[in-house]
Length: 463
Image (cartoon, rainbow, N blue to C red; front, top):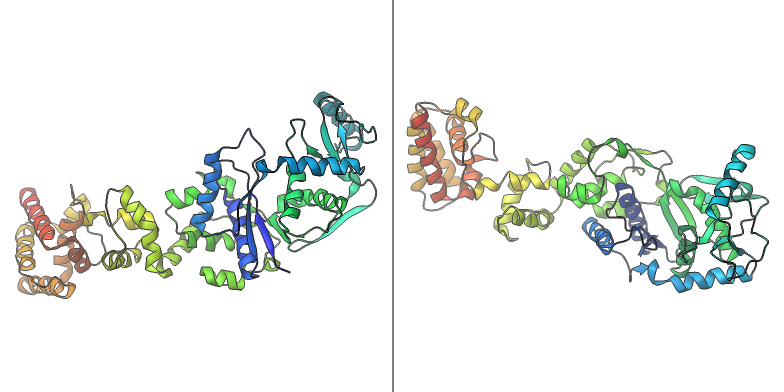
Protein backbone atom coordinates (compact mmCIF):
# COMPACT_ATOMS: atom_id res chain seq x y z
CA UNK A 1 0.00 0.00 0.00
CA UNK A 2 1.34 3.40 -0.98
CA UNK A 3 0.94 5.86 1.88
CA UNK A 4 -1.04 8.92 0.80
CA UNK A 5 -1.51 11.79 3.22
CA UNK A 6 -2.87 15.26 2.72
CA UNK A 7 -2.65 18.75 4.13
CA UNK A 8 -5.97 20.54 3.77
CA UNK A 9 -5.89 24.12 5.05
CA UNK A 10 -8.61 26.74 4.77
CA UNK A 11 -7.32 30.00 3.25
CA UNK A 12 -7.65 32.44 6.14
CA UNK A 13 -4.82 34.86 5.33
CA UNK A 14 -1.91 33.30 7.19
CA UNK A 15 -0.39 29.93 8.06
CA UNK A 16 -0.77 29.36 11.79
CA UNK A 17 2.07 27.54 13.52
CA UNK A 18 -0.24 24.65 14.42
CA UNK A 19 -1.17 24.26 10.76
CA UNK A 20 2.50 24.39 9.83
CA UNK A 21 3.26 21.53 12.20
CA UNK A 22 0.37 19.49 10.78
CA UNK A 23 1.75 20.04 7.28
CA UNK A 24 5.25 19.08 8.43
CA UNK A 25 4.10 15.89 10.17
CA UNK A 26 2.21 14.81 7.04
CA UNK A 27 5.12 15.64 4.74
CA UNK A 28 7.67 13.87 6.93
CA UNK A 29 5.51 10.76 7.22
CA UNK A 30 4.94 10.64 3.46
CA UNK A 31 8.64 11.03 2.72
CA UNK A 32 9.61 8.55 5.46
CA UNK A 33 7.24 5.95 4.04
CA UNK A 34 8.05 6.65 0.40
CA UNK A 35 4.48 7.85 -0.07
CA UNK A 36 2.72 10.93 -1.42
CA UNK A 37 1.89 14.28 0.17
CA UNK A 38 -1.23 15.89 -1.32
CA UNK A 39 -2.27 19.52 -0.96
CA UNK A 40 -5.98 20.36 -0.84
CA UNK A 41 -7.40 23.87 -0.39
CA UNK A 42 -10.67 23.86 1.55
CA UNK A 43 -12.09 27.06 0.08
CA UNK A 44 -15.84 26.57 0.31
CA UNK A 45 -16.30 29.36 2.88
CA UNK A 46 -16.71 32.20 0.42
CA UNK A 47 -16.96 34.85 3.15
CA UNK A 48 -13.36 34.20 4.23
CA UNK A 49 -11.72 33.05 1.03
CA UNK A 50 -9.38 35.22 -1.05
CA UNK A 51 -6.80 34.21 -3.63
CA UNK A 52 -4.21 36.20 -1.67
CA UNK A 53 -4.86 33.89 1.29
CA UNK A 54 -4.40 30.85 -0.96
CA UNK A 55 -1.08 32.28 -2.14
CA UNK A 56 0.05 32.61 1.49
CA UNK A 57 -0.45 28.86 1.88
CA UNK A 58 1.59 28.11 -1.24
CA UNK A 59 4.36 30.51 -0.22
CA UNK A 60 4.55 29.19 3.34
CA UNK A 61 4.77 25.55 2.26
CA UNK A 62 7.37 26.32 -0.40
CA UNK A 63 9.47 28.29 2.09
CA UNK A 64 9.29 25.40 4.56
CA UNK A 65 10.44 23.07 1.78
CA UNK A 66 7.26 20.97 1.92
CA UNK A 67 6.83 20.10 -1.74
CA UNK A 68 3.53 18.44 -2.57
CA UNK A 69 2.81 15.69 -5.09
CA UNK A 70 0.49 16.14 -8.03
CA UNK A 71 -1.97 18.98 -8.67
CA UNK A 72 -3.62 20.97 -5.89
CA UNK A 73 -7.24 20.01 -5.25
CA UNK A 74 -9.64 22.95 -4.72
CA UNK A 75 -12.96 22.17 -3.02
CA UNK A 76 -14.65 25.11 -4.74
CA UNK A 77 -14.15 23.30 -8.05
CA UNK A 78 -15.92 20.14 -6.84
CA UNK A 79 -19.38 21.38 -5.82
CA UNK A 80 -21.22 19.17 -8.33
CA UNK A 81 -19.52 16.08 -6.88
CA UNK A 82 -20.60 16.93 -3.33
CA UNK A 83 -24.18 17.43 -4.46
CA UNK A 84 -24.18 14.09 -6.29
CA UNK A 85 -22.93 12.23 -3.22
CA UNK A 86 -25.48 14.00 -1.00
CA UNK A 87 -28.33 13.02 -3.31
CA UNK A 88 -27.05 9.45 -3.38
CA UNK A 89 -27.13 9.29 0.44
CA UNK A 90 -30.65 10.73 0.52
CA UNK A 91 -31.82 8.16 -2.01
CA UNK A 92 -30.33 5.38 0.13
CA UNK A 93 -32.05 6.67 3.27
CA UNK A 94 -28.75 7.67 4.89
CA UNK A 95 -29.29 11.42 4.75
CA UNK A 96 -32.29 13.73 4.72
CA UNK A 97 -33.44 17.26 4.07
CA UNK A 98 -34.18 19.46 7.06
CA UNK A 99 -36.15 22.71 6.80
CA UNK A 100 -36.11 23.67 10.47
CA UNK A 101 -35.49 27.38 10.83
CA UNK A 102 -32.57 28.77 12.79
CA UNK A 103 -34.95 30.09 15.45
CA UNK A 104 -36.56 26.66 15.80
CA UNK A 105 -33.17 24.99 16.13
CA UNK A 106 -32.03 27.41 18.82
CA UNK A 107 -35.23 26.85 20.79
CA UNK A 108 -34.85 23.06 20.53
CA UNK A 109 -31.24 23.19 21.71
CA UNK A 110 -32.07 25.39 24.68
CA UNK A 111 -34.89 23.08 25.70
CA UNK A 112 -32.64 20.04 25.33
CA UNK A 113 -29.92 21.62 27.47
CA UNK A 114 -32.37 22.02 30.32
CA UNK A 115 -33.30 18.33 30.33
CA UNK A 116 -30.17 16.50 29.10
CA UNK A 117 -27.33 19.05 29.46
CA UNK A 118 -26.46 18.12 25.89
CA UNK A 119 -27.57 19.99 22.78
CA UNK A 120 -28.01 17.94 19.60
CA UNK A 121 -30.45 18.26 16.76
CA UNK A 122 -33.57 16.41 17.90
CA UNK A 123 -34.26 14.74 14.54
CA UNK A 124 -37.49 16.59 13.76
CA UNK A 125 -37.08 16.09 10.01
CA UNK A 126 -35.22 12.77 10.18
CA UNK A 127 -38.11 10.63 9.00
CA UNK A 128 -40.21 13.21 7.12
CA UNK A 129 -38.84 12.32 3.71
CA UNK A 130 -38.79 15.94 2.59
CA UNK A 131 -38.17 16.55 -1.11
CA UNK A 132 -36.16 19.26 -2.85
CA UNK A 133 -39.28 21.45 -2.96
CA UNK A 134 -39.53 21.74 0.84
CA UNK A 135 -38.32 25.33 0.84
CA UNK A 136 -35.04 26.57 2.27
CA UNK A 137 -33.30 23.57 3.77
CA UNK A 138 -30.07 21.84 4.68
CA UNK A 139 -29.07 18.23 4.15
CA UNK A 140 -28.23 16.23 7.28
CA UNK A 141 -26.51 12.89 7.73
CA UNK A 142 -28.40 10.14 9.56
CA UNK A 143 -26.09 9.27 12.41
CA UNK A 144 -26.62 5.80 13.97
CA UNK A 145 -28.55 6.12 17.22
CA UNK A 146 -27.52 2.90 18.96
CA UNK A 147 -24.12 1.67 20.07
CA UNK A 148 -20.70 3.26 20.06
CA UNK A 149 -18.19 4.64 17.60
CA UNK A 150 -14.65 3.35 18.19
CA UNK A 151 -11.40 3.83 16.31
CA UNK A 152 -7.72 3.13 17.03
CA UNK A 153 -5.85 6.40 16.80
CA UNK A 154 -2.20 6.10 15.73
CA UNK A 155 -1.22 8.61 18.41
CA UNK A 156 -3.95 8.72 21.04
CA UNK A 157 -4.84 4.99 21.19
CA UNK A 158 -8.39 3.62 21.24
CA UNK A 159 -11.08 6.31 21.31
CA UNK A 160 -14.76 5.58 21.88
CA UNK A 161 -17.87 7.73 21.89
CA UNK A 162 -21.56 6.87 22.17
CA UNK A 163 -23.62 7.54 19.04
CA UNK A 164 -26.31 9.20 21.16
CA UNK A 165 -23.82 11.98 21.85
CA UNK A 166 -23.26 12.63 18.15
CA UNK A 167 -25.37 14.93 16.04
CA UNK A 168 -27.11 14.42 12.72
CA UNK A 169 -24.58 16.84 11.31
CA UNK A 170 -25.26 19.11 8.37
CA UNK A 171 -23.67 17.91 5.13
CA UNK A 172 -24.86 20.67 2.81
CA UNK A 173 -25.84 24.17 3.96
CA UNK A 174 -28.91 26.00 2.76
CA UNK A 175 -26.76 27.95 0.28
CA UNK A 176 -25.66 24.69 -1.35
CA UNK A 177 -22.13 24.74 0.04
CA UNK A 178 -20.80 21.54 1.64
CA UNK A 179 -19.68 21.54 5.26
CA UNK A 180 -16.23 20.50 6.38
CA UNK A 181 -17.53 17.23 7.87
CA UNK A 182 -18.98 16.14 4.56
CA UNK A 183 -16.53 17.47 1.98
CA UNK A 184 -13.48 16.11 3.79
CA UNK A 185 -14.74 12.53 3.50
CA UNK A 186 -15.72 12.85 -0.15
CA UNK A 187 -12.34 14.37 -0.98
CA UNK A 188 -10.26 11.90 1.02
CA UNK A 189 -12.00 9.05 -0.77
CA UNK A 190 -11.37 10.64 -4.16
CA UNK A 191 -7.70 11.16 -3.30
CA UNK A 192 -7.34 7.63 -1.88
CA UNK A 193 -5.95 9.02 1.36
CA UNK A 194 -4.60 6.24 3.55
CA UNK A 195 -3.68 8.23 6.67
CA UNK A 196 -5.22 11.38 8.10
CA UNK A 197 -2.79 13.23 10.37
CA UNK A 198 -4.21 16.33 12.03
CA UNK A 199 -4.68 18.12 15.34
CA UNK A 200 -6.36 16.62 18.38
CA UNK A 201 -9.15 19.20 18.09
CA UNK A 202 -10.54 17.03 15.27
CA UNK A 203 -11.03 13.89 17.36
CA UNK A 204 -14.79 14.36 17.79
CA UNK A 205 -15.14 15.05 14.06
CA UNK A 206 -13.55 11.69 13.34
CA UNK A 207 -16.50 9.73 14.77
CA UNK A 208 -18.88 11.52 12.41
CA UNK A 209 -16.57 11.08 9.45
CA UNK A 210 -16.06 7.35 10.07
CA UNK A 211 -19.84 6.91 10.14
CA UNK A 212 -20.03 8.69 6.79
CA UNK A 213 -17.29 6.50 5.30
CA UNK A 214 -19.24 3.42 6.36
CA UNK A 215 -22.47 4.84 4.93
CA UNK A 216 -20.67 5.21 1.61
CA UNK A 217 -19.55 1.58 1.81
CA UNK A 218 -15.88 2.48 2.28
CA UNK A 219 -13.27 1.71 4.91
CA UNK A 220 -11.94 4.88 6.57
CA UNK A 221 -8.24 5.77 6.50
CA UNK A 222 -6.07 5.46 9.61
CA UNK A 223 -6.26 8.51 11.85
CA UNK A 224 -3.57 10.11 13.95
CA UNK A 225 -4.38 13.15 16.08
CA UNK A 226 -1.37 15.18 17.17
CA UNK A 227 -1.43 16.95 20.56
CA UNK A 228 -2.05 20.67 20.91
CA UNK A 229 0.69 23.28 21.05
CA UNK A 230 0.19 25.18 24.30
CA UNK A 231 1.47 28.70 24.88
CA UNK A 232 0.88 30.20 21.43
CA UNK A 233 -1.96 32.41 22.62
CA UNK A 234 0.26 33.88 25.36
CA UNK A 235 2.91 35.31 23.06
CA UNK A 236 2.93 38.68 21.36
CA UNK A 237 2.81 39.10 17.61
CA UNK A 238 1.33 36.87 14.96
CA UNK A 239 2.06 33.13 15.36
CA UNK A 240 2.28 32.64 11.60
CA UNK A 241 4.94 31.18 9.34
CA UNK A 242 5.33 34.61 7.73
CA UNK A 243 6.07 36.16 11.14
CA UNK A 244 8.81 33.66 11.90
CA UNK A 245 10.22 33.96 8.39
CA UNK A 246 10.24 37.75 8.15
CA UNK A 247 10.14 39.34 11.61
CA UNK A 248 12.30 36.75 13.37
CA UNK A 249 14.45 35.96 10.34
CA UNK A 250 14.38 32.19 10.86
CA UNK A 251 15.68 29.54 8.51
CA UNK A 252 13.04 27.02 7.42
CA UNK A 253 15.33 24.34 8.85
CA UNK A 254 15.18 26.14 12.20
CA UNK A 255 11.40 26.39 12.29
CA UNK A 256 10.88 22.85 10.98
CA UNK A 257 13.33 21.37 13.48
CA UNK A 258 11.63 23.14 16.38
CA UNK A 259 8.01 22.36 15.53
CA UNK A 260 8.86 18.74 14.72
CA UNK A 261 10.04 18.44 18.31
CA UNK A 262 6.74 19.87 19.61
CA UNK A 263 5.13 16.47 20.01
CA UNK A 264 7.74 14.15 18.51
CA UNK A 265 11.12 13.11 19.87
CA UNK A 266 14.03 10.82 19.17
CA UNK A 267 15.82 10.18 22.42
CA UNK A 268 17.34 13.38 23.81
CA UNK A 269 18.41 14.70 20.42
CA UNK A 270 17.45 18.31 19.71
CA UNK A 271 18.97 19.20 16.35
CA UNK A 272 18.04 17.36 13.18
CA UNK A 273 18.76 17.94 9.52
CA UNK A 274 15.87 17.57 7.10
CA UNK A 275 17.32 14.26 5.94
CA UNK A 276 17.50 13.00 9.53
CA UNK A 277 13.91 14.02 10.21
CA UNK A 278 12.72 12.10 7.17
CA UNK A 279 14.74 9.04 8.16
CA UNK A 280 13.60 9.01 11.80
CA UNK A 281 10.05 10.37 11.78
CA UNK A 282 7.15 7.98 12.31
CA UNK A 283 3.68 9.17 13.27
CA UNK A 284 3.49 6.37 15.85
CA UNK A 285 6.30 8.08 17.77
CA UNK A 286 4.35 11.33 18.27
CA UNK A 287 3.57 11.91 21.94
CA UNK A 288 0.08 12.20 23.39
CA UNK A 289 0.98 15.07 25.69
CA UNK A 290 0.75 18.65 24.48
CA UNK A 291 3.81 20.54 23.30
CA UNK A 292 4.72 23.79 25.06
CA UNK A 293 5.73 26.61 22.75
CA UNK A 294 8.89 28.43 23.82
CA UNK A 295 10.05 31.20 21.52
CA UNK A 296 13.49 31.39 23.13
CA UNK A 297 14.00 27.67 22.48
CA UNK A 298 12.86 28.20 18.90
CA UNK A 299 15.48 30.93 18.47
CA UNK A 300 18.15 28.67 19.97
CA UNK A 301 17.28 25.81 17.61
CA UNK A 302 17.44 28.24 14.69
CA UNK A 303 20.90 29.40 15.77
CA UNK A 304 22.14 25.81 15.78
CA UNK A 305 20.74 25.26 12.30
CA UNK A 306 22.39 28.45 11.06
CA UNK A 307 25.77 27.01 12.03
CA UNK A 308 25.33 23.70 10.21
CA UNK A 309 23.21 24.15 7.07
CA UNK A 310 25.13 24.47 3.77
CA UNK A 311 26.26 28.03 3.22
CA UNK A 312 24.32 28.04 -0.06
CA UNK A 313 21.12 27.81 2.01
CA UNK A 314 22.13 30.87 4.02
CA UNK A 315 22.81 32.70 0.77
CA UNK A 316 19.45 31.68 -0.70
CA UNK A 317 17.61 33.24 2.22
CA UNK A 318 19.79 36.33 2.76
CA UNK A 319 20.11 37.58 -0.83
CA UNK A 320 16.47 38.85 -0.87
CA UNK A 321 17.07 40.49 2.51
CA UNK A 322 20.16 42.28 1.22
CA UNK A 323 18.14 43.49 -1.75
CA UNK A 324 15.48 44.89 0.60
CA UNK A 325 18.28 46.73 2.40
CA UNK A 326 19.38 48.26 -0.91
CA UNK A 327 22.44 46.05 -1.41
CA UNK A 328 23.00 43.93 -4.52
CA UNK A 329 24.83 40.65 -3.89
CA UNK A 330 25.13 37.45 -5.90
CA UNK A 331 25.78 33.90 -4.81
CA UNK A 332 29.47 33.07 -5.12
CA UNK A 333 32.77 32.76 -3.29
CA UNK A 334 32.83 36.33 -1.96
CA UNK A 335 29.30 36.15 -0.54
CA UNK A 336 29.83 32.66 0.89
CA UNK A 337 32.95 33.90 2.71
CA UNK A 338 31.00 36.86 4.11
CA UNK A 339 28.15 34.65 5.28
CA UNK A 340 30.57 32.20 6.92
CA UNK A 341 31.99 35.11 8.86
CA UNK A 342 28.63 36.52 9.87
CA UNK A 343 26.77 33.34 10.78
CA UNK A 344 29.24 32.55 13.56
CA UNK A 345 27.89 35.52 15.51
CA UNK A 346 24.33 36.11 14.29
CA UNK A 347 21.18 34.72 15.89
CA UNK A 348 19.09 34.89 12.73
CA UNK A 349 19.14 35.82 9.06
CA UNK A 350 18.07 39.40 9.70
CA UNK A 351 21.07 39.94 11.95
CA UNK A 352 23.42 38.55 9.31
CA UNK A 353 22.24 41.26 6.93
CA UNK A 354 21.93 44.22 9.30
CA UNK A 355 25.21 43.46 11.08
CA UNK A 356 27.12 43.29 7.79
CA UNK A 357 25.82 46.48 6.17
CA UNK A 358 28.92 48.28 7.48
CA UNK A 359 30.74 46.76 4.48
CA UNK A 360 28.76 48.97 2.10
CA UNK A 361 27.95 51.90 4.39
CA UNK A 362 30.55 53.87 6.31
CA UNK A 363 29.44 54.81 9.82
CA UNK A 364 27.60 58.12 9.98
CA UNK A 365 28.32 58.33 13.70
CA UNK A 366 30.38 56.46 16.25
CA UNK A 367 29.02 54.55 19.21
CA UNK A 368 29.61 56.86 22.25
CA UNK A 369 30.64 54.07 24.61
CA UNK A 370 33.14 52.71 22.06
CA UNK A 371 34.57 56.20 21.53
CA UNK A 372 34.83 56.78 25.28
CA UNK A 373 36.62 53.47 25.83
CA UNK A 374 38.90 53.26 22.79
CA UNK A 375 39.57 56.81 21.50
CA UNK A 376 42.07 59.09 23.23
CA UNK A 377 44.60 61.80 22.41
CA UNK A 378 46.88 59.26 20.69
CA UNK A 379 44.12 57.84 18.47
CA UNK A 380 44.50 60.24 15.47
CA UNK A 381 48.18 59.36 15.03
CA UNK A 382 47.52 55.67 15.61
CA UNK A 383 44.76 55.53 12.98
CA UNK A 384 46.84 57.51 10.44
CA UNK A 385 49.85 55.25 10.96
CA UNK A 386 47.60 52.23 10.44
CA UNK A 387 46.13 53.83 7.35
CA UNK A 388 49.62 54.37 5.91
CA UNK A 389 50.62 50.77 6.61
CA UNK A 390 47.45 49.39 5.03
CA UNK A 391 47.90 51.61 1.99
CA UNK A 392 51.22 49.87 1.32
CA UNK A 393 49.60 46.44 0.89
CA UNK A 394 49.74 45.23 -2.72
CA UNK A 395 48.48 41.68 -2.23
CA UNK A 396 45.13 42.17 -0.46
CA UNK A 397 45.02 39.17 1.88
CA UNK A 398 44.05 38.76 5.50
CA UNK A 399 47.60 37.62 6.31
CA UNK A 400 49.06 40.88 4.95
CA UNK A 401 46.36 42.88 6.74
CA UNK A 402 47.27 41.13 9.99
CA UNK A 403 50.95 41.92 9.36
CA UNK A 404 50.08 45.62 9.03
CA UNK A 405 48.24 45.61 12.35
CA UNK A 406 51.06 43.67 14.01
CA UNK A 407 53.68 46.18 12.81
CA UNK A 408 51.72 49.12 14.24
CA UNK A 409 51.25 47.35 17.56
CA UNK A 410 54.94 46.39 17.73
CA UNK A 411 56.20 49.84 16.74
CA UNK A 412 54.05 51.48 19.40
CA UNK A 413 54.56 48.83 22.07
CA UNK A 414 50.82 48.14 22.28
CA UNK A 415 48.79 44.98 22.76
CA UNK A 416 46.83 44.12 19.63
CA UNK A 417 43.51 45.08 21.24
CA UNK A 418 44.76 48.66 21.64
CA UNK A 419 45.09 48.84 17.87
CA UNK A 420 42.21 46.63 16.79
CA UNK A 421 39.48 48.24 18.89
CA UNK A 422 40.06 51.84 17.77
CA UNK A 423 40.31 50.56 14.18
CA UNK A 424 37.11 48.55 14.56
CA UNK A 425 35.28 51.61 15.91
CA UNK A 426 36.61 53.69 13.03
CA UNK A 427 35.63 51.20 10.33
CA UNK A 428 32.36 49.79 11.68
CA UNK A 429 31.19 52.54 14.02
CA UNK A 430 31.19 50.37 17.13
CA UNK A 431 33.79 48.23 18.88
CA UNK A 432 31.92 45.03 18.11
CA UNK A 433 32.26 43.14 14.84
CA UNK A 434 33.65 39.94 13.39
CA UNK A 435 37.44 39.54 13.28
CA UNK A 436 39.14 42.82 12.42
CA UNK A 437 41.29 41.35 9.64
CA UNK A 438 38.23 39.87 7.95
CA UNK A 439 36.36 43.16 8.37
CA UNK A 440 39.18 45.12 6.76
CA UNK A 441 39.42 42.62 3.89
CA UNK A 442 35.72 42.88 3.08
CA UNK A 443 35.52 46.68 3.30
CA UNK A 444 38.52 47.02 0.93
CA UNK A 445 41.77 48.99 1.05
CA UNK A 446 40.62 52.35 -0.30
CA UNK A 447 37.46 52.43 1.77
CA UNK A 448 39.28 51.36 4.94
CA UNK A 449 41.85 54.10 4.46
CA UNK A 450 39.09 56.68 3.97
CA UNK A 451 37.29 55.55 7.13
CA UNK A 452 40.48 55.58 9.19
CA UNK A 453 41.20 59.14 8.08
CA UNK A 454 37.64 60.26 8.83
CA UNK A 455 37.78 58.71 12.32
CA UNK A 456 41.22 60.23 12.95
CA UNK A 457 39.81 63.68 12.19
CA UNK A 458 36.84 62.98 14.46
CA UNK A 459 39.15 61.89 17.32
CA UNK A 460 41.36 64.93 16.74
CA UNK A 461 38.44 67.29 17.15
CA UNK A 462 37.09 65.34 20.14
CA UNK A 463 40.36 65.70 22.02
